[in-house]
Image (cartoon, rainbow over all chains, first blue to last red; front, side, top):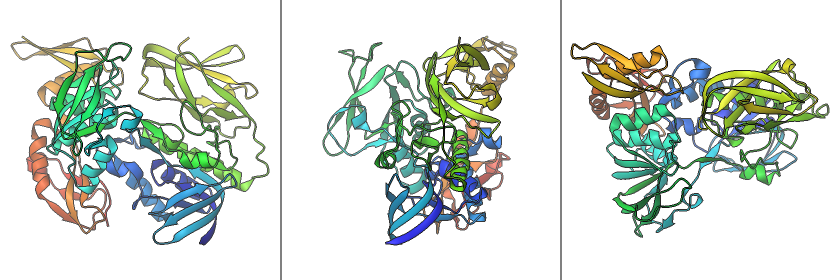
Length: 417
Length: 119
């Protein structure tokens, strides 16, 4: 077994990990990225569509272009990268066990760890579709990788379940590659993805979106040949008599993302039941001192720009920890979701804040027009920002000023009065 | 007189508005909450444009496909022909992100760029 000692190990070479590793290197930490795929960039490499980077680079870029900016810096700064290497275990004392075909087993003693494993797609078993288990039932991300990176067409006639952005983007992509997309089915009575994607991916190509309709069962043993769809009522209960069979040889699932936290759980890191990621403080530190989390492993973001930003915050946190591990007797206050707020991230703020401003991220529960966000502490309400519209699928980022806060008591964030 | 409906995608408010085209060709809009909606609906009616992203074949790389992107948005009506053209080309490593692979594709004035470095 190869033994290594490293200041900062970044697990995952996607957007969160790349940004974190660059910042950790800038902060003077001896840094190592461990990536299980054969290239850096993570899921960005299969996102050949544009729309990335507007916030950070003020420019519409494709996923690959966005990733390349960071990969070039990783190369310039000669940051250590292990590709094709799978982390098998991390311990609360920050030991990492990994394996790769080139290096064999590795045992790494890390002074700090940044978790940047991203998220994975929900599958059919998580949305309870009954019926046979044939080939041809794939998640949207798997279809995306086949078509955009590996050069396979996984079917000829597709049905898409779920109106999340990846599903909508794949509706257009499959159409352009010659796969007939019969329609997109969404169990909710509202679309899940961005309006821009409904317009440019479905309307442009006359692909119908059926709201309040879901896939009830999948047919045949070896290869999928049809699905049964059914309409649902307001309470999402199936309406008998509305079933319809659709011939297809591909069912694409775009039914949500969940942070990938098997490693975090092995290290006994405390997980938030709402975000499904580690509970972190304003430095992105988890419940285990010296282990940080960034990007979609912590909470599913919808802008990659925010993912990168969380990586950089985590890296600055890791640098502080490595330089002064003993001084890190950290006290925090809790941030609570208030009116119409589903969750707030990070969940804790350090009492000792060094930066003058810091971001918090949140999602609302219900759509609302002309509302302001507020922070409330001990009966005092301060307005943060006014919004024309807030929607559940669109995450809100607010920049808080440290001097606005009373860092001795918990705070609550509201969307609306 | 003709009426068309458009959902503006300039901001998250996503206004649904109407474009009214008079018989003499003049256009006006209803239902958008700002000027962006008006401009969007008129552009969508007269010459909708989209950024083209797809892949082309590449030789000598870890993967068989190279992602590409148009330098600017292309008229929607020309997208399919541009795609057809791009299916026929094949490039070789090394390719750097931003390299021009096709200059002025099908007389659109738009170039096709490599969207990733593959060495």
